[in-house]
Image (cartoon, rainbow, N blue to C red; front, side, top):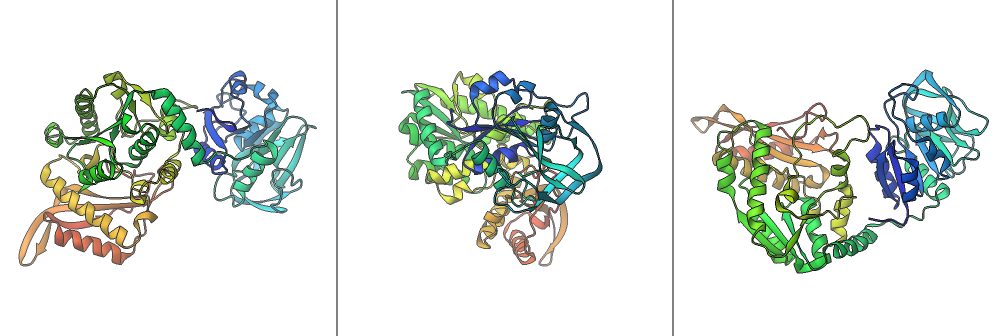
Length: 514
């Protein structure tokens, strides 16, 4: 999608690259993450208003350190180098970078000696977040120091003639309280951005693009009830109305009442053309005897493609397939620096559908981060409960039922999960946490109910706080709330006699158990 003004974020392997891009977008300027080695000609042809060079774990003087095209410094486009990005920029502009005598990690106070334009209106002393072992040791005669600390004399610099600015700290993290203002000063005062990228403008452009791509053809959308597929369905329905055909497959691994809720929301309330398929017995049959998590995922993904294809073949004049691909999916599918990440688990989005069906892809949200997808849903007038629904994995309850999956254990898990969610909502905790769910463990424990001894299932509760799902911490729920949830599960759910609470963090643990 074309944008009147946008900023390129060149990724040198930073853990904060996505955060930088999100901070720019929060200031109503579109941003895109690109490989650090993109050619200057290609970048110039796309005409960004500014370029941000991200941080990175390497040292600029190491032989295998990531590099950028030196010609980007000749384009005349304003540039902001952050940490490693500052060092590589200063190196290209004639400075020396070497290990610092005193490394800086954590909060530091910088003293501003030249406030404009980056530090305008922020005061002489600013708290920032440092994370570096190397630093610029000297500045060429064309580089001017803007701020310093006692151990980092060039904490911020600018070039006299090249529109390059460098910060040895991270303005994108919350530990730099006025960091967003610094980024905003760069965007507005240096790049001349107006800040006109809003969700309303995104919808307007997306609708135009969808109509141009689809014409009079039909689009099939696989609904899961999750946030991404629900929002993309509503966006497409706004653009093309009854040309959209939604398919919802009941794989027998949904949560309590989920199938009925999706039918009510999208068929009855939003008046979409909705095809429902009950394939629960096919999925449960295929999973019989399977205990290995990755095999579960592959069986479910493969069978979903078969079931979806059978239903899609019944829809005439359908040449397009809509997917709720979002920007992190795009970024993670290709690694700008250092090669692909190790596979932790198969992605929950089912791949292979376009090739199997011979469809052209429609992915109107592939530029958006998760929080922007939720804002898009709100702008489209969707229900709060849909927009802020917690993530639910594609394989569904199969990977929350540890070990072999069967109907008896799924029934226990559904009831326990429903009680957890119901009590979190009642206590006004649901919207405060990032994800909450129950897990049924492949073990039984002894218990006593009345005068009888029981030997039944263990339910684990997982409730985490997170902003980006890259890291997560367990939610410090009140003991009274945890006690109420546990008591209800043990008393109301037949087959469960013990409840435990998962207090591990990500990393080293993952959010999901499988």
